[in-house]
Amino acid sequence: MEGKKISKNNGMTIDKLGEMVARNFRRMDKKLDKLDGIEKDIKFIKKTLIFGKHGERITALEKKMVRTQEILNFK
Image 1 (cartoon, rainbow, N blue to C red):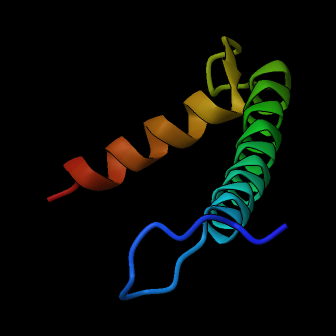
Image 2 (tube, one colour):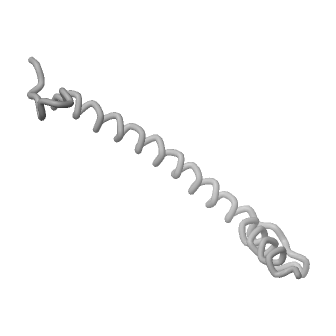
């Protein structure tokens, strides 16, 4: 069964359009999976405790943020 043509110019059929939409959804799924992985990494980093100079508990992520802020404030 041939797909119904949408316009005369581009020869785009509804079937082809469906394929394009499906392809885009698959791409989005892959990107969402990557984001999921990054979120898990961040949670893991937050759980990993590193002790600061004065014995207070600082997560690795916070320590990195503090260090970045120190570098930015350095004149």
